[in-house]
Image (cartoon, rainbow, N blue to C red):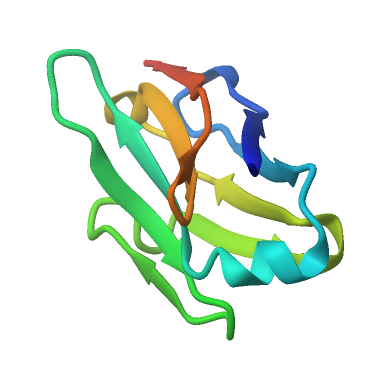
Amino acid sequence: QVRVVESGGGSVQAGGSLRLSCVASRAILSTFIGLGDKGWYRQAPGKQRELVATITNDGTTTYAHSVKGRFTISKDNSRKTVYLQMNSLAPEDTAVYYCNMGHSWGQGTQVTVSS
């Protein structure tokens, strides 16, 4: 079974940047591609988990309105990794960020943005 592992979270001041990474460990390339669409989600305290961004196998991306123009999702098939570049971070971006690949979810990585 594919294990999804996120990294790159941390604390940053408003206006700063972070890059999250998500690797499909123990996966070969065909498995990674076979997982289909991949996405990043986030859950802030007291709120429901929400979609942040997705990327398809052919590289088509979608974004939540709140992050469009600030966040960029990308992938590296050779590394079986999906990235989320987050720029111009704001306190409302504070949340646990989760990576999803097919039916597999990571454990989450905390992002905290201070004003």
